[in-house]
Length: 357
Image (cartoon, rainbow, N blue to C red; front, side, top):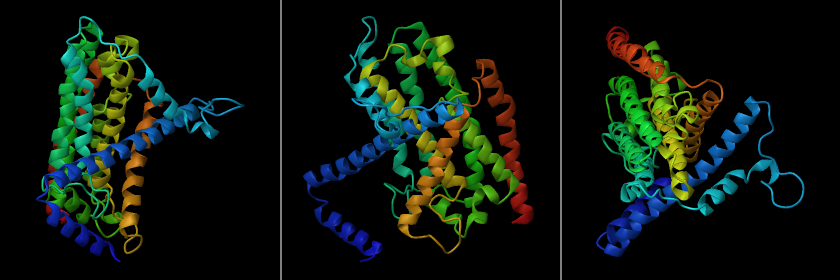
């Protein structure tokens, strides 16, 4: 029984049952629930990774289960679950002066923006929810959805610190989307496609066919995209919208309980999406680094997840290594450094391709 046979059988089953409304509802709910489960498990893994990496950098042990009674389990692996249960059981407070409908809507809107970004991410040759012919453009577009949600959260809270955080977030995300998008233009120029699967297939043939290694300008594009992606996900040193030392908690100052948890779940989901785009666009996606070996569908999932999680790990490492930038420094880096380099980089890729093919 081959993988192709299984997919042909499923396709025939879906075609037969496609006229049934109940089946249509199930066909929509099952992938959504599976994706939500994946995001939840991934969030637990990354939270544990962040706790341990930050502890290592600070020369601490981190969460550890010691002694008898309730604790975080061996090596502290249950700490993320304990944190989630704590947030879910906390009182859900809505400020009296808040705009209640918008206040309630904002955390779910930001999660939806991160959630729908997974639709076009290829986890393997056959494992993708929808292989859109404008996949990479779609992910960049829905990534902007979080701007609306963060402004809503800041404004609806009726709190000056929340409003400052929302305004900062809008300025930051809109600004850094430009160098990130220009870096992706390099990938599109080289692969001649907007399809995520098409970009991955362009890079088949081993590690030296990955876009990041095709020419020096592609490496610069990867570096600019990764820095811009960190800024778009509000990760330190670019966490200006929620700068605790200045804005208490920024846009989520007034949030508690499950709504507060949704903001953090969305942040980790966004980290995976932007890292997945970088892995797909520059690091070969699900392609094996060794030509002709380890190219089965299961290996494809392994390579894609490994590359993406490595980039997520790099984000965590940078968070606990570099201090936060000031607002003026943040904007200067974008408009005076990354944007000019991105524009010059596009011309460099074009000239390099014209000369060397």
